[in-house]
Length: 210
Image (cartoon, rainbow, N blue to C red; front, side, top):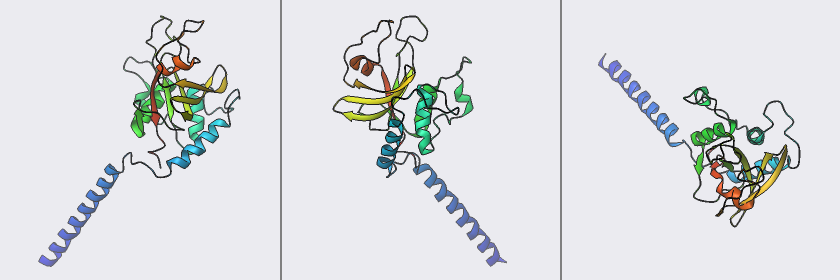
C-alpha cells in the first residue's frame, strides 16, 4: 500500500515538474530572434517591389490604402498585421483605431518598435502628421501613414508605400533637421528632409516571427 502511494506521489511530482519546464520554455521563447530573418526580409522586399508603380493591390481582402498595402505584403509570410484583440480596435472614447495604429499595436505585441537606430529592409516605418487629418493646422495627427523599408544607404531610407493612388518608392533623410510645408499647408512626406522628421518609429517583426 505504501509503495503504491509513493509511486503515485512520484508520478504527480514528475507531471508537475514537466509542466513547469514547458511553461518556462513558453516564457523564454517569447520574442526570441529567429535565424532565418535575413531570408524573410529578402522575400518580403521582393514581393513588395513587385507592386511598384501599380495603382493598387487588386484584392478585396485588404483596403486599397497604405495600411492595406502593408498588410498585403506581410501576408506573403502569413503575418496578419491586424491580428490583435478586438477590444484594442476601439479607443476609450469609442472611436475606432485606424489601420496604421492597429499595425503599430501588433508590432508592439509581437516584435519591436524602435527609433534610436536605422531600420533594416523589410522593417515597417510609421509616420505622424503626413496630413492634417483634423484640419486644425497643428502637428497633432498621429499614425497617418505607413510604409515598408526596401533600402538603407548611409542615413537615407528608401521605402515603398501606397500614396496618391499609386504604389511608389520614396526616400527620407533619417537625420532631417527642418520641416517643409507643401501647397496644401501639410508637412510634406515627399520632401526628403520633412519626411525624416515625421517618422514616429520603425517596426521590426521579421526577427521575432518563426
